Length: 264
Image 1: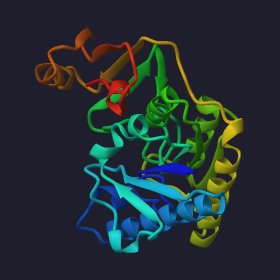
Image 2: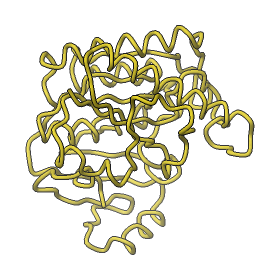
Image 3: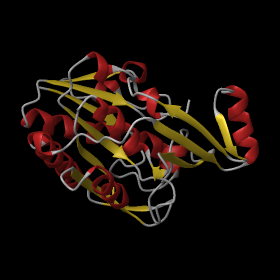
């Protein structure tokens, strides 16, 4: 059995101040990287317990330079972000998991909520409905009938996963959001246990979790924070349609790679 684990950093256990993510010269960022590895390894352990014999992991935050490879569980195979873009099309994946993710924009008291860029993006919509990064991945996996079985992050992230993907998805709540900049973390050992248990549970129940799908074609829209940001994106990607002063749109007729659920 092969599983794929995507990671981000905002929803990692022990990461409860925005500076831990945004200031790489601050010692808190190094702590966040260490916790990223601990949470990832907990998910790997859960996957092994569930019977996985091939476990891919992806460093999905920013440019993908956050892992400390020497701390990664040796039973895991790290993929680059480039390899992730079409891995589900190339290889049979039995279950998809996300570790350390965050809620969509506009979610009250969700720690570091955003989609792609908190500096540029205000909203991301598919077929007229607001979504976040969880659904982007779920759409990609679902196009190949791969179930999205587990997520870890703050309380808002866990609620969003269940609301969007379904009540059967396993969740590991590792902290509670207090505001955009602050969260209240669980004890680290408890957080790791929750991740291990949820990963094992979700993978074992993968046949009960329906792959996430929406009707094709996908109408993908992004509303930016300001009109000038929208105009800069349109200069880079002139094939996009401008809907209003701050919104760009594209239509995706199929989902073959992760890029097909993105705006550009």
